[in-house]
Length: 107
Image 1 (cartoon, helix red, strand yellow):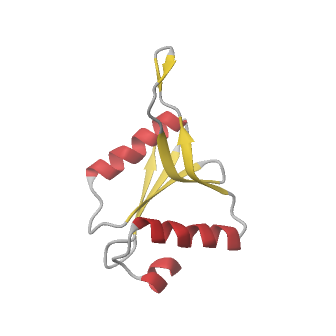
Image 2 (cartoon, rainbow, N blue to C red):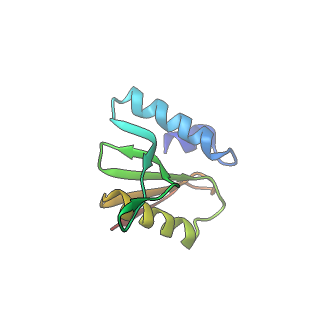
């Protein structure tokens, strides 16, 4: 909430991600940014990978958006990331609206 209060809306996603990284470091919250995951298909690993915005405390996928409204596509993307990563909890946070919006997504 503090990031949204200070930066407001209308900036690109990467700016909010940079601010989140600062806050995680400042508060000693363990995280990985742009965490790479392989996509397995049958007996092979596919060439294309996916990159979660953040993995927080090794347990939570945190996806950041900066759009007017969250779409079903963004929610489905987070759900797919949960399936591929084998994690159970995802948080989808949108900095693009007039107020901060977050959705909790469970696998």
